Image (cartoon, rainbow, N blue to C red):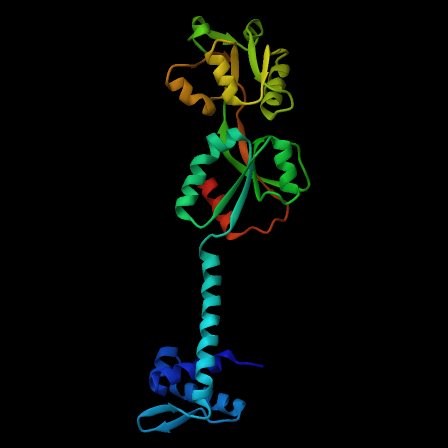
Length: 296
């Protein structure tokens, strides 16, 4: 069996030309260096050095013949060690992230930019889709991590790790309903106004219906939409009152195109969570991205 340490000692002695200097470089004793050289010579059945008053010189029929090959071999091994060290301390490869368009826009965009600045070698594959198809991708190894509106039904094939963003659902209106600005309203009052709600079978719609039904209220939308962006546009145009996470409407409210209605009781807080395949083998890049999401 090849003892790589013997070859490392041989190479260092040959390069330094001295047992003493080699011992200093290798941080071992001079007798240990001398013993390693003798052991390798015995193993190869040929002398590798001439011991002279000037130091250690390679023999023509031994040391000089193998020095070049040993140098190249150790160089390759050092390259392997450096690559492994890099894998442990930096991120490479591709991250496949599944989420809805809204979560990408309002929750993940800043995190992806920050991660890219820290780990520019990592490539992103952004898979925008509704939650059921995103979960299916996660379960069939077509994405590495998913970001979902919670809560979702328990699934034995995935693990929801934690929440990274809180969502506070509110009711919003545009200038067409300016008479409602600052006016106290109840969830029951909203039955008298045209409502714009997310389409059926979305987490947001299910959360609203569960909340309303717990209070004995039935909310019937005049329009169902498939995106928050479309809802905001219709609300600005005066088509009705919308229900949207405050975090997704802040920009439109700050420029005065939308305003928040004063509705009681307040809806329970929801969240966006991270989901991973159960028993997933996490790459360094994925672990680093998860860490960034948890602290920002």
